[in-house]
Image (tube, rainbow, N blue to C red):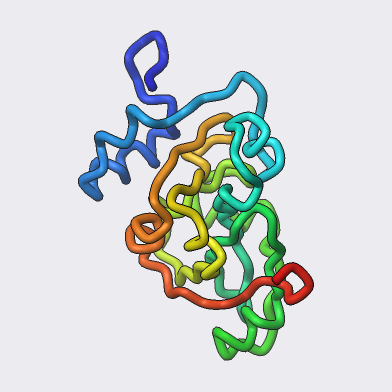
Length: 168
């Protein structure tokens, strides 16, 4: 989709990343909503998909170093499992300013790739339960669909099990 002036609905940095990755045709599949899809529940309701088909892009700080965790929308990240996976002393949720500084995007619109800086990326295996998942396209109003294996590959993610055990 594009706006009335012909520019893509996606954040410009994300649109550039799609082109750089050879995925420029994906811009036509970006969906823009009049209401924010900042949370996984809002996105799933707007799209009309299962909550677990939403790919959340969450930034954590592992010993102060940003790391991106991709998680299905119905699950929560177990920071202790992330800590063990990374061999870190401490893992905490990154503050909003760190998220924007690291990714170039605001919380609620962080895509799985196309960030300002390179970070380590972990993707929970739960994303692979679907043929298609939806992720933010750089704004709280835009999303795009992609097969999860492709999303994980383009994000340069390592597949891990970091969901909270209570939802398994």
